[in-house]
Length: 315
Ligand SMILES: Nc1nc2c(ncn2[C@@H]2O[C@H](COP(=O)(O)OP(=O)(O)OP(=O)(O)O)[C@@H](O)[C@H]2O)c(=O)[nH]1
Ligand SMILES: [Mg+2]
Image 1 (cartoon, rainbow, N blue to C red):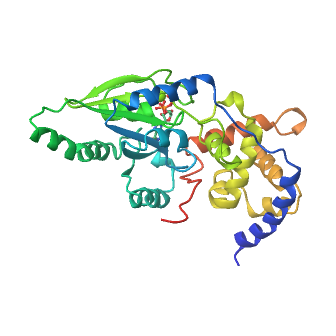
Image 2 (image 1 turned 45 degrees about the vertical axis):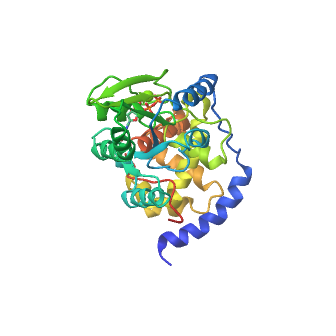
Image 3 (image 1 turned 60 degrees about the vertical axis):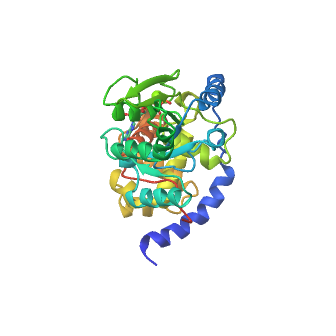
């Protein structure tokens, strides 16, 4: 057993004791405009040939809206794993395999840099080929291919559209709820894309789903307790990516030695990060809000490393 595994065992025991006394998160954010967008998607789906479901490569399961998946289940569908630059490459590969095994084409992309974008365009053409050929044989000149882009808030729908269309038509922003209404855009002479506002669903299946959506920036800051969310993120990273967490915040084995038996281990770890980053208020106390903001922002922007929060368990 190596050093990390030993520490892990001690901590798991501690964590079980700790969590009992902690408040449980109850993240839910489903404002009226999302219900409205969902209704709009149901109506528009009737005109659509292909649906591109954009997922966050770091949380392919939690970022898949069960309501939307159901609405578009009878459509030709492509899954796009966006923000692959922020995710663990090996895990992203497993996720694309996972979807392909279930007969859904899946493509990993980075909408900021353009990686993988051409493959999406090829896939749209491929998936439509049979229908287009059959229409041609019947003597019909095929109309436009209509593609609807759906996904949770802040996952990169508008960024993807800007990339694939090589334009900057859509407004993008580093917060959820940027796109307020649907918008069409044409690319080339055959494809039309429909951008839609991000939609979540009324009740998350588990606390973990809510946390994953909060860590990756799909839930509005105003409706979450950032300190609590950062606490859980630190706990997750300490359990799953300790090397990356320690390297980023310059945490030494001797630092851990000092806090490892503390019943509030994860809170101490958060304070330790706060001290390392100078997140202090008068009297030398830790500015909890500040350290929470640092960790959440740095995670969201990939500064802690390429991290996948959900692993494929069975391909
Ligand atoms: N690192 C990284 N960031 C990305 C990528 N794609 C988009 N982003 C960033 O993610 C943020 C959200 O992008 P948007 O395109 O506005 O997301 P959206 O899905 O349209 O969001 P809503 O309109 O609010 O639903 C922006 O800060 C983008 O720069 C990507 O592939 N990698
Ligand atoms: Mg948008």
